[in-house]
Image (tube, rainbow, N blue to C red; front, side):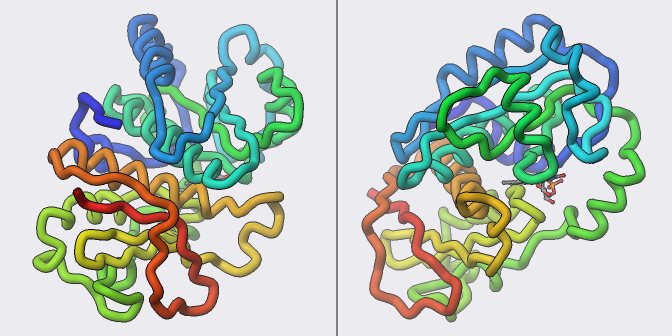
Length: 280
Ligand SMILES: Cc1cc2nc3c(=O)[nH]c(=O)nc-3n(C[C@H](O)[C@H](O)[C@H](O)COP(=O)(O)O)c2cc1C
């Protein structure tokens, strides 16, 4: 989808906010957020359901655990999906687009895929049935300072660092590094992918540029998703799709996503083809 705010500014402004201030989000902004969420769409076509929790629903806040990771948050947004092909990527795409919009409004968020009491939040958000409930995010204005546990977490996961181009982006195969010069007009969307958030900051996205196609692979961390009934790093792949797509749309570079353009190239162990973007 095409957005009305600067992608680069939002990508650079966004970081995980784990300590929130008391400042309420203005009514107008709340309305804008809900309207924006209603317009969300994704290139894979899966349906993502959004669930809000805040205000009165937060009377039970004591019971809603984030294992001390999130402090001061008064509202949350969660998402549910049917577990089908590309659903986790579609969720990553829409949720991250929302998060960038909130960053643009000056509102903090934090992707939570692991450190939240899934059962407690599902009850508080009235989530029923057999849909999967993979992620939530608190949202609100950031407190002036990070809390101690937050600072410690950021240090352990090296949250302020990102892998270099030569570890992420390749030309023709998964061995030959891609230079920014060779990437040309695609250097900007790739750089926006590189700066994105990912679960435990593992940055599993690997990208191969091949003539007019940009192929996205997941460098899956063995065992990482064993505690979930799905591969949470697929959500990271959806985040990469969002950053890439919002960037090419902003720059007016035409193209489309294709989930069946898997090229015949040699894949290292634990590397999986996920989708491609084809320039028109
Ligand atoms: C799919 C996904 C799941 C995440 N789950 C958690 C989580 O459970 N708890 C948490 O504190 N941070 C979580 N994060 C936040 C990442 O740790 C964070 O994005 C990364 O370390 C980079 O830091 P930054 O967001 O400040 O740039 C998650 C991020 C993503 C994309």
